[in-house]
Image (cartoon, rainbow, N blue to C red; front, side):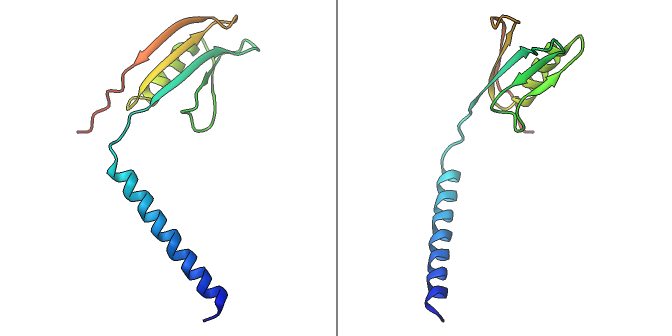
Length: 109
């Protein structure tokens, strides 16, 4: 066995040990519920609203139509059903016109 092959194997074993240790720590700690924060803001082009949150995997979502704000709030509530969420609705001037607090109440059967 060459020196660089031996070095690779040792690094690989160290990485495996660290990964196992990290996973053991994660699974042994109690689950912590995080809070999701959502913002529903009107679009500058006046064609609906944007739902903005760090909890959304692909960035903001665009809602259009007569029930755009209501649909955005409903989606945020659904998306955070296992987490506590605060959903703020803003007007064109940037003032908060509504706040919805949603307690995560998802239960496994």
